Image (cartoon, rainbow, N blue to C red; front, side, top):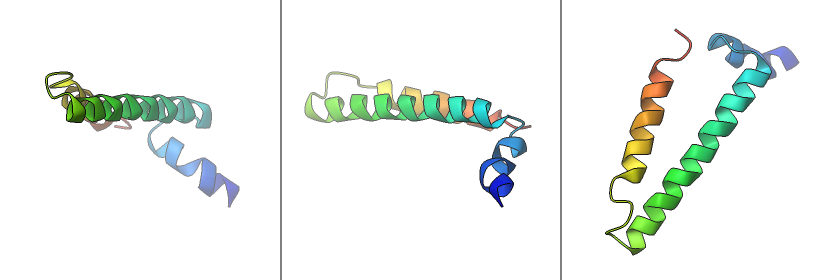
Length: 68
């Protein structure tokens, strides 16, 4: 049961538990940064005009190339 909860998914993307934790944690930080840029852009439209969308596109491209 614990193996299924903690190890099956990391193995499916060819990572150890620790490697997956580092990747997912870094991804979460980038999502927070993109969200912050979008929030600032919402208040001051001339700031961070393409930052959040560029960050999301980069993250999407990175995810598409994982575990294959």
